Length: 264
Image (tube, rainbow, N blue to C red; front, side, top):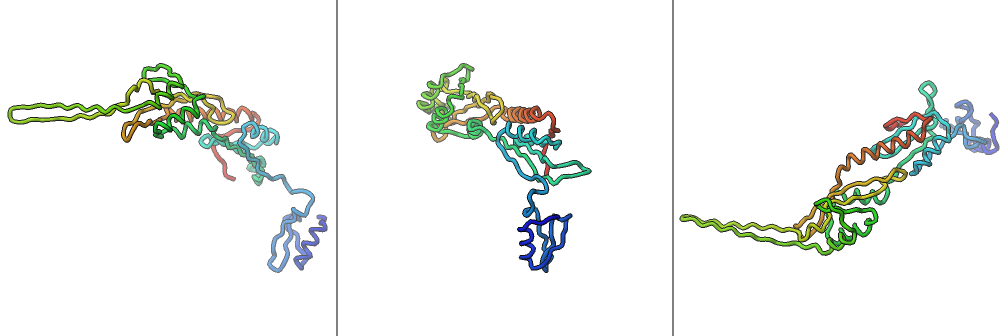
């Protein structure tokens, strides 16, 4: 093994001539027998190493396909992520797994807003802001299944009010009497409010657009407010994850694509 000037200077600085190890790729130097990697003093690395991380589906596919590696691709459907250790090797000749490509597909802002709204309660002002911010994606339907216009929906949320109804029942008998008071609070003009909101959105970058439904319920305690709940969200997530896995698999026909994660 020929040594560069920098390598010789490093050895001299150790005050002791080194003993070669690891087939000449390292030296044992000093009284404490310190092992020094000589790779940084050589013209080239011993092997290619690096970690490619991306949020782009097409970029991940392009990078993995461009390396022409036989390494498997591991697809984590729950995390909407994929990873390939391009120098993993084979069981008979395992690699170091120093060269990897990782994809973490990000949620779109509109899908993040949808998930945030799910299970949340909004007052009148917050509900109006939600419809104004994302109205270009939304369609509305009342309890009868009839479509509602966005501008009228915004107006209905702004003008919503509560009606307090009190009903007194009185019953008198010969030896007893009973008075019952029933109190109920209802939302006036509820038919003008949407019962279901449909979000038309792309959940993750690179995936297809889909429509997700959200049910609206009115709450009367402490003033008018509205609860939102996603409809069949778990089923939609399964469909989204299946589409993601299919896109990675179809984009890398030469690679073995496996569902799961791998820890080297």
